[in-house]
Image (cartoon, rainbow over all chains, first blue to last red; front, side, top):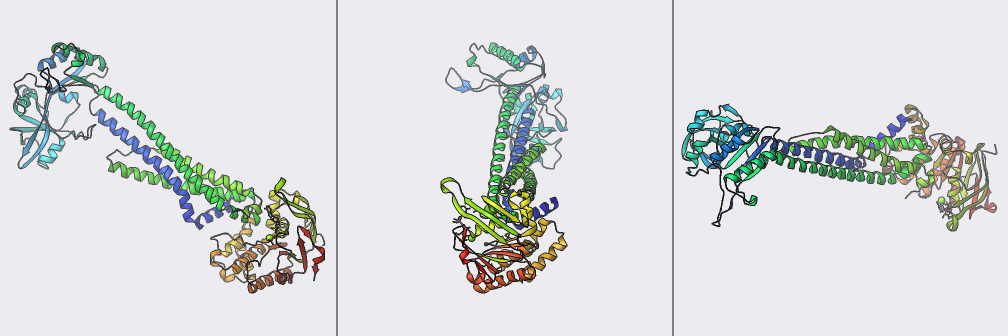
Length: 404
Length: 230
Ligand SMILES: Nc1ncnc2c1ncn2[C@@H]1O[C@H](COP(=O)(O)OP(=O)(O)OP(=O)(O)O)[C@@H](O)[C@H]1O
Ligand SMILES: [Mg+2]
């Protein structure tokens, strides 16, 4: 009897591939959509996490946003070396302090030139942002002290300016000075804002201050990065620094601060929170598409069984038992659902692969999602193939035959 | 063998309450083995209702039906299905062939449910198709056959399982005279050569000529005055 049912079911599917395909379509779309959405969502989250982590794990960034002067103009009040040293001396649990002076300049080599970001840094920079050279070396202490015109270039600068020419030892013109390349940074890729972090040239801070942005003012540091040990409370450290800076800058009113302190930990926590709500949102959307797919399957199944009530009547009239008819429909809908589910998984897999490549999202494939959506759609297909068939096969043969 | 089919006081009510309709008003009918009965009467007189009950496709509201000594109305659904499967062939007015299915496969279907092995099933289905003159058409689906051919496939399907009793509800209803005569020849042969008992519903006196007895219905009752025995 089982053999007969399987035979009849497969034969019936083969009689109408279009109907079988339409039924499968709901399963394919339900399963495929869920797989694509969940996996792209997971990939995006992984990407955002990685971008944030590339900032360094417990880092304070002290900026000088433009503020209103008493004279009515807006201007940034940058930082002094004295302020940097005070922070370094007084705050406990510091791994490294990195004063940075940043600007942009045109870099030239032979007949090529590119506009790029140039930053004057000290030794602390490399610790603070956890960055190493892939080729060559870092700056030596005497270079920081003397402010020699040497530079370390980012991967994008190397590629765009030098191409295949070996980088170490080459002399670039940066702004108006000639500077020798001593190292190439390892590639960091895209930053959190989609910016190219490898489009950069580093120079010793003193060399930058003298050659790129000559400035006699003592306020010649645009940003201070403070890398804290992992166990240090960033809130307390940040508050301590704020109090110190206000004191040194004679600020009595918090709202008139001429500086701003950001914490990567804080940013991380904010982003993690929004990632959490994003996960919930994607889950909800996936749930809805699974439901829509399920309703699609349900509809097609109901329509096709109604259509087939006469067929059921004919089978009953020539002596098929109720359970034989049911078994046939069960095998039919299970086969269609299973094949549809498998196609949906394959479709979802390749669409995820394609879309993640197109959208520059890391590819992930979650087996649990695939399994859950497969089982869910499959069950809907089976249940809604089975229930109407059961209803029809319980009719008097004559009523099933006369079904409109 | 006078008690092959024995109907007593068969009442059939359609619907219930206000809308109920009394389609059969207490029918008594006996059919002997080897008879070819033509069931006649005006439209709405209850012929199809009677045929469906005789074919075990529907149950009467009241009365008793003995088929070959078996009390049909006491059987459960499965037992009734097995009775249809093993002893009764039914030819429907609307053919009721399965769509997208070849003539041969349609004829094989009752044998398949009987569990006849593939080779034998094939052989018997071909024999049945041969009897209705459609051996060459076995591979055609219903859509590729004419109305007369479809009706002959339906007959082949009904006789493939060697039923004791063959029911035909207006088997020539949709056919022209020439095709109708062909069908009647086939039924007549089945009755005479294989000894199959036949009940045929018709309202064409020409077709009733082939039967050995005519039973006339009027308003859910048998009109004995019109009965004919040949
Ligand atoms: N399923 C049903 N529900 C309600 N009434 C029905 C049903 N089937 C038949 N009837 C009624 O029962 C009566 C007898 O119907 P039946 O089909 O037996 O007539 P018939 O003699 O076969 O007529 P015809 O020659 O037109 O086929 C008709 O009045 C019909 O309206
Ligand atoms: Mg009728």
